[in-house]
Image 1 (cartoon, one colour):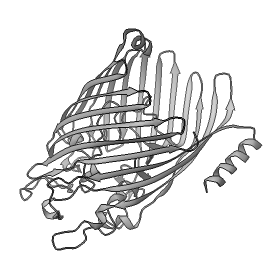
Image 2: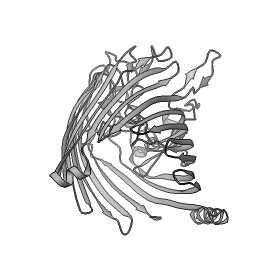
Image 3: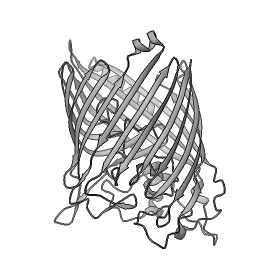
Image 4: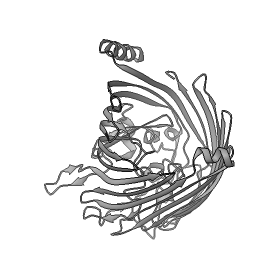
Length: 459
């Protein structure tokens, strides 16, 4: 199949005298849950669940063709496909106290193959969704035009999270418009779908992150939008934004960052990267009275992020703070945040999200410290955090490293995370319901080891 794809793309490009570039990789992602002192059996009524183990294999193949090339402008077309499969899933053998299998089809589909319909309105539930996975998708089909004063993305394309989409991630379906003049840029994005196609163990076919019920009683996706502007000069970025989903949320946002130049780092032997982000969600009529991550939406809430990184030669050290006032990450900040340096998807797959950390929970406060270094082709990092939220408290430390065999196009790495989750009385692991006095709360071990490999076979 890959050979056919490559041959077709090369024939078309050659016939039209187009420049083209291929991208292809295959990856393996493996997680081993430790379950230190966790109960042996599942008890859903008490929110007692294990930390899963699983192995996933993914492959990606894409092409970018340059249709037009001017002195200061270009027009590109891109297309790609990806496929993934769960090779091992410990949840298929997890049992309740009476010896029954809890979910015979497994729960690891929440990482690879998740599919509950574009609008999330399929007739089956969580315990049966493993029978209906989508393991093949096409994450990109786009046109990209770029010039001195204007940039356009249209179709299905990767979110430009390193440029201006601070609170989006993965792949989007829609359009981006960017207007550029000297140190200023103005931009607009309309998104009508999202997909995941990551070598780090995530494969989600196209879906609508949110939908509303119309007056006629049917579900519809009205689209996620944001509009804003940039001022960038000498390492300083000031970015006011406005995100909105009609009738669901309206969110003003401001990001301010300052980073010393690579030249400064080379001359002085040290550098600094400071980032601050604040956004203030206002809930629309379709959000009020509804639950997000086990708590009701607030009419008004606030989310604040701050990170400070110091670079010293080949090393870095820093600190960060994430604070929610209310349920501020119910709709935004849960699908991307370029300031927050924490992996928020490191909980148990049996918990809500699925597997989302309480870092983004209502009233969450998370201070964290991090550090790392780069020695030739070896990178290492460590991050420790404390999370206090309305639903649960968490303590975690992650230590990892990776080695990049650049000549061969192979990246291998691993990390271990020691992670304690304390779900508070009233709440229950795996339940999106509001607090209940019948829930005693519990403490679970969410520690695990991850081992991964990525091979770029078209480097």
